[in-house]
Amino acid sequence: MDTRRGMAAVAIAAVLVTSGCLGFVMGEEPLEYSANKATVADGALGDSGTGYTERSVENQTIEINGTEVGIGDRTIIVDNWIAQYEKQDDFIDQQVGLFAVVSTHEVDVIGQPQNPVKNMSNSDLIDQVLGQYQTGYGDISNVRQTGTEQVTMLGQQTEVTIFTGETTLEGQTVEINLYVTKVKHGEDYVIAIGGHPTKLPNEEADIYTMMQNVRHDSDEE
Image 1 (cartoon, helix red, strand yellow):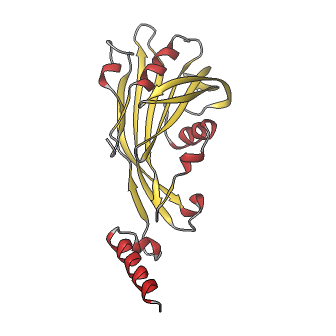
Image 2 (cartoon, rainbow, N blue to C red):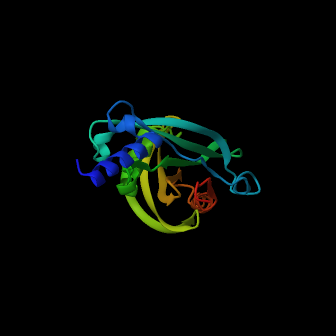
Image 3 (tube, helix red, strand yellow):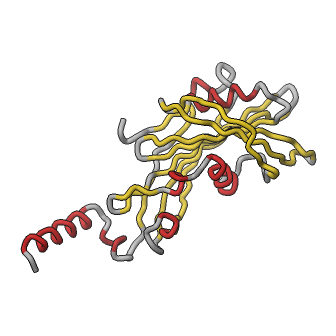
């Protein structure tokens, strides 16, 4: 073997061992990543803010087949975070808004950053989020895009796609608006999704306020 090639092979092997990647490369173990938590700033919550309150902040583990990101049939395990919020109108005794923030880590497979979220449109994202997480609105049908808006989230200008759909609440069909956007922040993708009944159009402004007040612990900060 050429000496320089031999030294290069040894160096690459050393990097793989010290970075914990060798087991994955050899097909012996999955590759694991953990996202940093994303939430909404306290100042935007409660009576002094939008009226939203925190419902839960949870860590959720998702397994990704390597074929989805073009690296073959090997498992990638990603620990995501989801923070969920709700807004209740006590006067009419009705939930008038829901909001969630999801953070998911970018997967770095031997120097090649990958994540299915990277190439997803907002339409794809809403299908993914509604299918994977409980939003509080139950099953939503007849979802169609009805508009777009620009907001600043985590210091970045981003496009919010607005969808309208239908769900069943207390035995009645209710039309709702859904809002979804994403940004890349540090090594994570942060997705924000909110919703409210269309009969309460003033709730739209609070959804945008929630997006503008998303906070994320980036490793690069």
